Image (cartoon, rainbow, N blue to C red; front, side, top):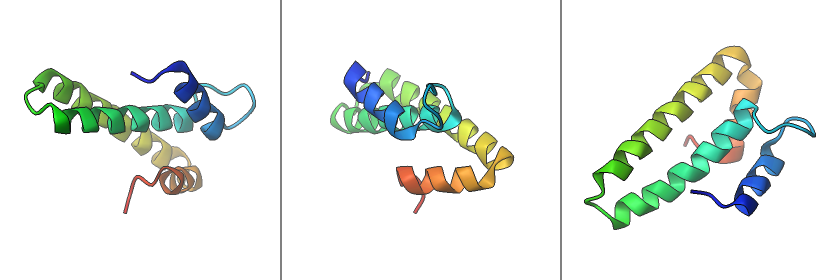
Amino acid sequence: MLNKEVKTKIVGDNRVHASDTGSVEVQVALLSEQIRALTHHAITNKKDHSSKTGLMKLVGQRKRLLAYLKREDQPRYEKLIQKLKLRK
């Protein structure tokens, strides 16, 4: 889990407008940070299968959000991908 300070920083960096907390960009950024943390946990704890299952669910959710954003607004999608360095 992410602590409050980290979440606040991520929301602040990725918000679309001043009171934004739930846009696709913010959700994808928060999921990406959770995925990074769980990936590190999965590498160090190889037998923790329940965490790996949760990790796969988060990856799928992020994938669906990115597909939605790509379908609805291509320039925002490309900007987010570059900002979060998700694709190579």
